[in-house]
Structure formats: C-alpha cells, structure tokens
Length: 168
Image (cartoon, rainbow, N blue to C red):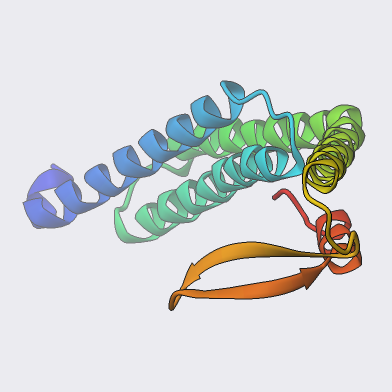
C-alpha cells in the first residue's frame, strides 16, 4: 500500500542511497582497521578513515530521518535503527579516541627517529665524500635535474632542512 502511493524511483533512490552509505561505513571501518601506522602520516590516514566512518553514520541517520518525513510509516519501526546508529557512532568515537591515546605518541617518536636516522646517514655520506676529495668541507654540490643546473648548498643549510623536514 505504501509503495503504490509513492513513485518507484523515489523509493529506489532512498534505498540505494542508504545502501551506498552503509557500504561506505563498512569500507572506512575496514580501511582503518587494517592499517597499522608507523608514522604520523599513516596515523592521520587511519584517523581520517575513522572520522569518515563517523561522518557516514551521521549521514545515514539524516537520510533515515528524511525518509521518515517523506514516507508515512510507523515511527516505532525506525527508532531501533536510529538507536543502533547512535550506538555505532559512540563505538567509533571511543575507538578513535582510545587508539589516538595509545598510538599517537609512538608515531611521533617513529617520525623523530626516522628524521635522526636520515640526518645521520647524510652526515656519514658527507664525511665519506670529504675523505675522498680534498675540498672545502662546508660547501658541496648537489645535482638537481632542474633545467640542467647545479645549486651550491651549504652543509649547514642541508642539515637544517633535514632536521625540519616532516615525514608526513
């Protein structure tokens, strides 16, 4: 009886939209759950997936509320679904918060260690290059493939840039 009073395309539109949102929620949860970040960049990607899943839950809730307003149906049929969506939002927010509390500091430490390791490798390479060729130890040439030119870079500038590089 309800289907006959509304165009089929409208019913199919809302059905497809709800199914697409639910698929997106599962995709974001799966993507976040399968990531084990070792850097701040990866940590932020995982957190974004978690946030996107929460956002999709809110969107699903809004679409269901819109469907409630458009299609006349017993409100008691929709209440359990809205409650389940609210519970899911709470679970996702708790997961995101707990994960951040446990792992954010470790990811920052991993980035700091990577930065130090890179700086050490550059220092070691420079020392090795200095020992092979006699030249001024504070200036060296780095070839860049930018319009066939070479730029002279000061050793201190390179170490400063490397120390202030974010690996995310």
